Every structure is written in C-alpha cells, then in structure tokens.
Length: 111
Image (cartoon, rainbow, N blue to C red; front, side, top):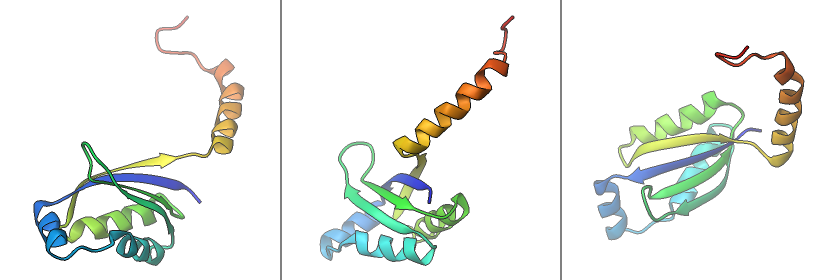
C-alpha cells in the first residue's frame, strides 16, 4: 500500500481546547485512517513550521484525500501538506525503470 507523510498545523482553537482537555490525537487519527481503509503508522508532535507529522498507509490517493478532507472539515487543523513516500525497494524499481526510459528521452533544448 502507498505510504503518505502529512504535516499540518493545529488551529488556535484546537490548541486552546487541547490545553484545557489534553488528548492523544493519534487515537482519533488512527480511527479515521482505518475507516478510510488504511493504517496509521506514526503520529508525532513536531517543532518548527508544522505542529504535527503523520505517516499512513492508504490504498490510494483518493482514500488519503478523503481522510484529510474529513480531518480538515472539522476546523481543528489547517495547512495540511501531504507527500507520497516510496520505500528504498520501490525507489530502486523506479530508478531501474528510468534507466530503460532515459536513452529514448530528449531534454528540452537538447540536440
């Protein structure tokens, strides 16, 4: 199953609510990912530009988008940024496929 890495920010209201009533957001995110047909691999609070990072397996980008749209619609998170991730074995396959394709491709402006 494809892996997705998502970073996001909590809204001010979400932070205020979690300070008043702390909760483990990994549980809620795990249930959401499971309901969308996937699996939460990890959920981390992060420092810097984003407040959290999650890693999930999901059957397709449609299911991942649905889960992220559902999360975003609640108003507690914003600025979601998602990246498709490949394992090193998958990347090796991509490089092997590129090796077959590269000789037949002419770059822009190339002779």
